[in-house]
Image (cartoon, rainbow, N blue to C red; front, side, top):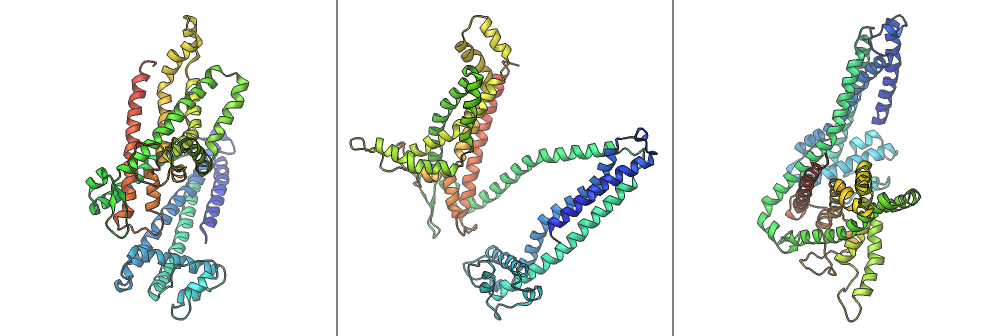
Length: 487
């Protein structure tokens, strides 16, 4: 039974439990809801909760754990001699999963029967051609060991799915019966439902924290593996970035870090003044009619995909800069891809982030502070400079930090507008690249995660994480320092 059907059955059971639970609670109170401890809806919610929540939790855990258990079991049974030289068990297992998924697709589309998919041999037919006929593309021919492992994988997955279906539906039915058995007028259904809602809210609030922790640990473990293969000193202080999957790589990150900070600095130099001035105008000087028109138009920039900005940098801004700074006599700029190209376009992209957030923060400053300043004889501009902006400074710092984090993590504009050269240069009209662009290039294609050339992407990602964390700490210090003056 597909997972979608299981969810539909659970939803139907929850609706049924809500209706029957509510009805039974009212019946136990003689039809008078005043005799109930809780509102009737709490009784129905209690039954629905016990029917669905444990079953959904079991389903989620099963869907996560089952593939790992099956992969581990199939990998242990895989013969060592079947792994060819230059390959690895992880690559072979990816082929096994691909073939197993292809067999499932072939069965669904009628190209193979379930019996044929489980008994077909590599020598009897060309599996690659048969799977290709139903739209499943394989990069190479399927040998007998991979096919046998794929068939074993399918068998384990089928058995596990059947057990999962029975366990989930059985648990749901058990919870339904248990919830219905407690439906009495004196039962404290409200307490249990509210505790369950509180637990749900805590779980939702924990997702962000757990996700962050998971990202950090994945970066840390792979970064440690990288430094086992490549010296940390050469990575952090190396001045040359020249990866070579054939060996002899130089993986110094300083050229990439310099390109990242240089482009981000130019972007912030464009976005912060323009965005902040726009926010001051919209919040302090613009009429309501002008604000209603200008603010949505300004925020349209935030909805433009970054690939469009990248094309704009490549096709418009780059050639324009070349025509100005590359003309005869100056000859500063040789090509359209340069730090200045990416920085200017990225700055335009960041304007709505700075302006929109700063505008909301400035509007949040109490009007009484403005009135007091004006009442003491200050002009409008003096009030903005000496009262409003200092009061809004902590929030403005947060807006600038958000823009800086977005600039540091940007990829597409850099790839199309700044080039791919990893170099240390002060010339803003030279082509450079950033950490994020090289993370993409190092993980593009069939990356072997046993090599430092692929694992270096995690070390670069960890470096960006530490930089962003440092920016957050600095911003938090500034926010606390200035907030004390107005609270």
